[in-house]
Image 1 (cartoon, rainbow, N blue to C red):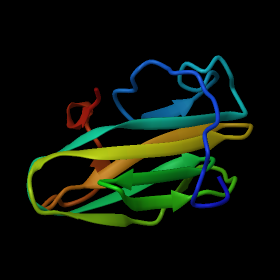
Image 2 (cartoon, rainbow, N blue to C red):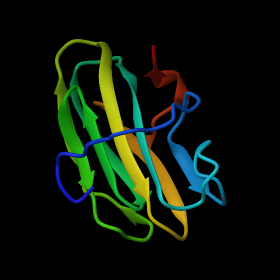
Image 3 (cartoon, helix red, strand yellow):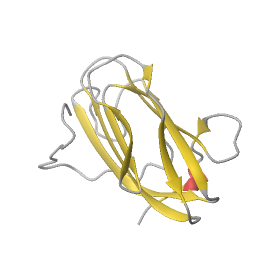
Length: 135
């Protein structure tokens, strides 16, 4: 995931992921693997109020997150657990917006936690499961 464009040539569809708050102690999602895993997650986020939403993540290893087609997190190199820079997206109409997450784990420990700060919130929190949706 060294560049902005990542091609996913083949893969196995997994079970829906209902929350991004994971510190893996073995198998990554339902891949049956502990290393060398790439994951593409897509779905929707319910944005209940208009305004600027801020996003941040803790990941190990690489991560890219887009919300409503805007890249809000881009932390591609191999790294240990670390907090990403803050990304923002302006929402003008409350509704469901598309989210796409590309994550990979090379080897060793693995972690993926996605946080947001909705308009008016005092700080960041894990995005609650009720705010995610999928088809």
